Image 1 (cartoon, rainbow, N blue to C red):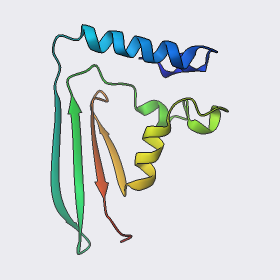
Image 2: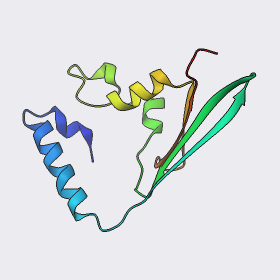
Image 3: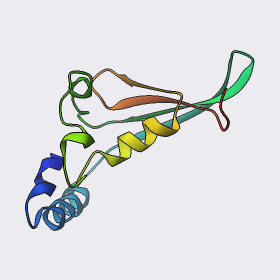
Length: 109
């Protein structure tokens, strides 16, 4: 779903209604979550990999300076990805944008 629809006056309500409708219509789908401890410079960190069976999204837009939280005055979307990036050592999108790897350390290394 296009998060830009949240920018309209009734956008958030419409977005949530459409999300509920689409989830109710979903006949099949899959989410894979893989957790693995890895060593980085002598420190244990957690690699979290999440992959779903969906169509993904164009994650490269953020690398090209596409829609970012800074460009949206009311912060109506994009907060989740920004939060993950702030907490993670590294975030890697894979393929069509339906898979992401996040490396997390509970303390600064």
